[in-house]
Length: 104
Image 1 (spheres, helix red, strand yellow):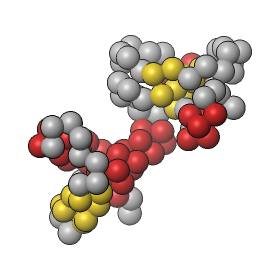
Image 2 (tube, one colour):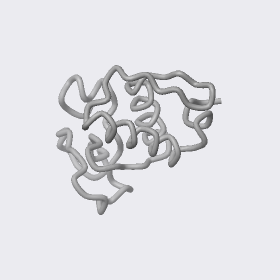
Image 3 (cartoon, helix red, strand yellow):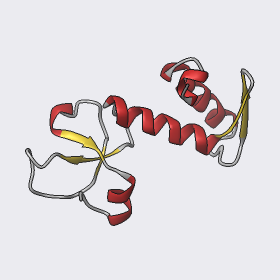
Image 4 (cartoon, helix red, strand yellow):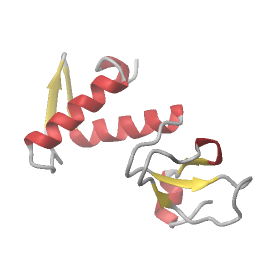
């Protein structure tokens, strides 16, 4: 069972993350979350949420993405600034692409 499932689903896990960020004035790095028998760091929760979004093609403001090759020859990485993006022509940027600064 994934961490997201252990926490009660994506919406619940996102809510836990958001509450933590509010409680720690926007910076919850290094904070350990204890919830329903789970002890996880804020970073582990952020990573699990990102992987879930990548797997399920969910985009949130701030996520990094690239246009699929079918729609653009450019390999620039973009940041979601509104949720009106055409999901059929974009995909999440991978860790490797983020590190390289371009679509691979």
